[in-house]
Length: 454
Image (cartoon, rainbow, N blue to C red; front, side, top):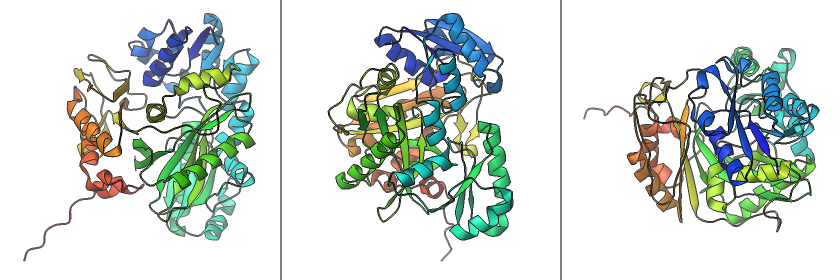
């Protein structure tokens, strides 16, 4: 096992990694921008190094700065967290070239699976169902012909993307050029790669994903599926496992598809295969995230695994904790609520300022992953997520009620949050019944029809 690990990230995920390292007896090194000097991950780590100004491209996205920090502190490995450089093949290669272990897949695996268009090709070869779409990235010259071949509506997707960025839905040909420019520009700004590809847009699917882990010895595990259908602007708000729409037979098929892809890519580490599940129960491969997911805690709650620990074991050449087969038992139900600094009443407008009051829920089955504390000043430069509220209970019905109770206990003053949006979600009859899809939030927030006079 590693003796000292640098965490190339910030906020709650940096703290999450620090905690597992501490349990394993390894030292942690935090990196931080000038704007994050008072962040909790800086205070909890064994060592901390400032790597640059507030702007991410000059700090958390600076490969030279992070590699230098690792060398100065004597770190023998780097954990990238999620976002920033976590799916960057050049970063993985830079770690390797400097004698530092990257806690994640190889540069080749990231290139194969992290590039969405290339991952589609690999899925086809592995026999995994894919949505109709382009085989390669699409340029402006062939865009119209390729879109017409697929048939509208289509989805434009960033080839190197993630987190809902670089995605546009196009319903008619007249919108194509403008939407393609916008998707490409957003992808270039977010990922340094403006390449896009097209997929057939499937109306009102569920967003289902399967977490997997694979070590250097060929041991591979597929964990029970997560349902991430409740989204806003293609960004997840609520995640749960297991999915109310997946039975044992379908779960077996989804897990096999994830295992087949991991084996085909000779993947080492933890990753996630994302699928679209249609209303009639058919599923299609969407993409692979070659990193830890924000929503990994729900999987930990229903399986008892520490997924960061599994990442560390795989990267250090050791075997995974469990080598008894490709699947693991499922216990109970877990739901995660992403609490963001946004004003729900103003179309989720970002909110910044000083957190004056921060009272967290507790009790049975409650977990909070956060980097926030009372008196913390929110930086304006990064993601708006404040905390993840994760609940576990023996049944889904109990988990929904536990969510309702915990959200009512969660008190924040000084900034606006999305707590009230989540309260609206858990009170929804459709959510309680498990009737959700990617159009759920749009329907939930739609203005009520005016009552006509008699």
